Amino acid sequence: GVRRAGDTIHVGALTTHHALERDEILHEFCPILPEAAHHVGDQQVRNLGTLGGVLAHADPAADYPASILALDAEIIARGPNGERVIAAQECFVGFLTTALQSDELITEVRIPTQPARTGMTYQKVANQASGYAVVGVAALVTLAEDGTIATARVGITGAGDRAVRATTVESALTGAQPDEATIRAAADSATEGIDLLDDHTAPQSYRDRVTRNLTRRALTVAAERAATG
Image (cartoon, rainbow, N blue to C red; front, side):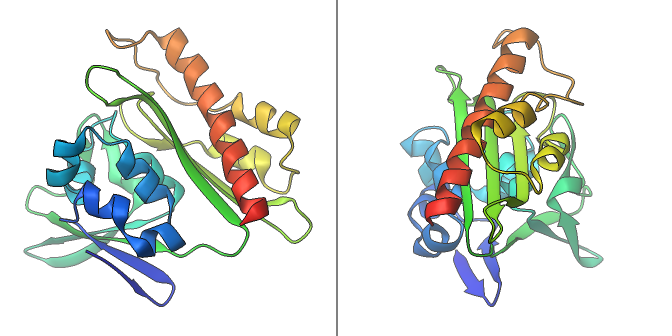
């Protein structure tokens, strides 16, 4: 289930994709998760699969990790030694590999509520056979009072062996105007530091182009939502 306590949204690990897609708290305070949930698999998968299961499995083409990274969320794990907090950016360490220990389970995801004038979105190019992301990009933009970008966070999935934050893109946007030229220039660095996958789904050249284009689209949508929200 989902609950809000103060400035934090708590999402239980066994919350299904369908429940996330329909949850009113998330639609109000964290709409990127329902948006991502809508892209997961098909109706049968959304009825059975869970947020915690996706994060623990750490498939490089899964949808949620990009959004969890952009939200700067915390993943709560529990094992024989008690509970510990794993920052989203430290969770995904390699192909199908997380920072979880072998005797730990994910119990909850904690998401900070965002300030006013924040927009967010998840954009995806899906493999038509499986529904998994060839590339997926989550973007969160918060605008300052003068209209410049106070905060930008970008999570990318599908491009490499794990979901990552596009920190170079984020740095290029902080303090800048959210105009087309600025967003385009920043998005062109979206694949910097990613060892792009080259497989039967898509060659590296395609993933490079799609990642940059999706990043530009996601940032544009997030900035527009921030300006009108």
